[in-house]
Image 1 (cartoon, rainbow, N blue to C red):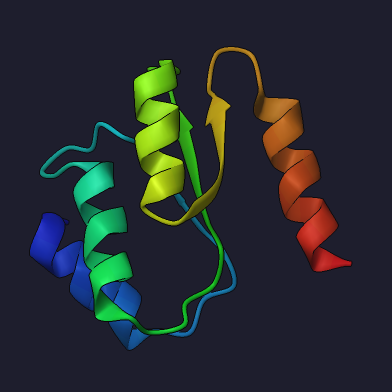
Image 2: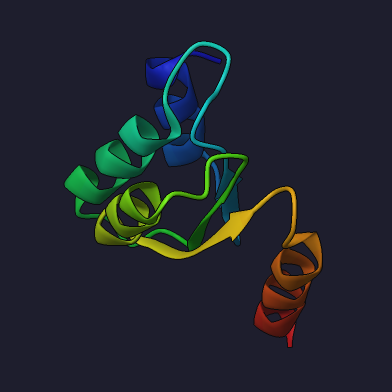
Length: 88
């Protein structure tokens, strides 16, 4: 999906957690976080999982409403632990 369609899909469904990358095929994960934040609607938690774990991207993601940010190359276990902790 592109940014508009992704946002539309997220707004039209009930979901428990949204896990997004920064770099997506047709849009930017930060733009999706920003659109969800601007909605001022209560959504489930959002997590960013990316190959670009810079401090700047982490800080921006958290400012846009992500509850956490994980490095794809090193933190898959931590991502799984985070999601599992939400389930209990």
